Amino acid sequence: MNHIKENFFEDKLEDNASIINPNEGEKLELNTISITFKVTSEMSNDQLGVYEIFLPPMAIGAKLHYHRFMDETFIVNEGILTMQVGDKEYEAKPGTVTYIPRFTPHGFKNDTDKTVKLILIFNPSQKREGFFKGLYETLNEVPIDPEKYLKLYNKYDSFPIDTSNMIPIRE
Image (cartoon, rainbow, N blue to C red; front, side, top):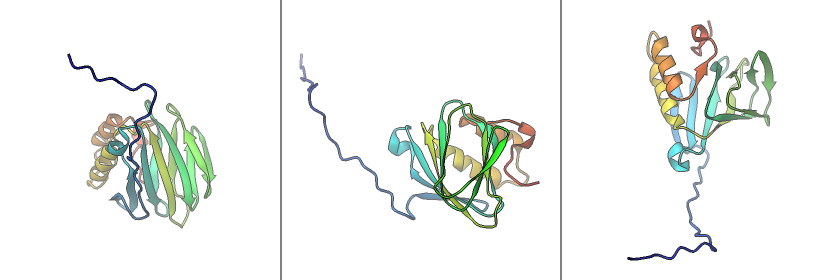
């Protein structure tokens, strides 16, 4: 029998860092919303997802929903993001960090005439890139199929509070 002696006293160091520069990463354009994948589920072994979002004037990022298995963090870099948490709304100015633990109803939108730039972090990431790609497909269909939208939401750990008002478009 071949026994490989494991060293319990020394760490094995590796060079596995990822450096993602500005304007790098896979980019999706959802109508007028731009999403760039910075740290993906594949890179982080599903532990972390980091996404850069450009939310144009009067755009809705997501209506009120919650997650069961992941936490979400918003970091506003430019503009004013309107955050809804439960039944309250507040303005998140540049530099604001909003941590949304699982089972916390939340939504976000841009109610201003300037683009909002933010970083969105999911932990764990749960292959969130598939959600964004499915969203791209679903929201580009005319008309938008609410059943398909809900199926996508549920597959990727997102649960709308009101299924009759879940599509992220202004009435």
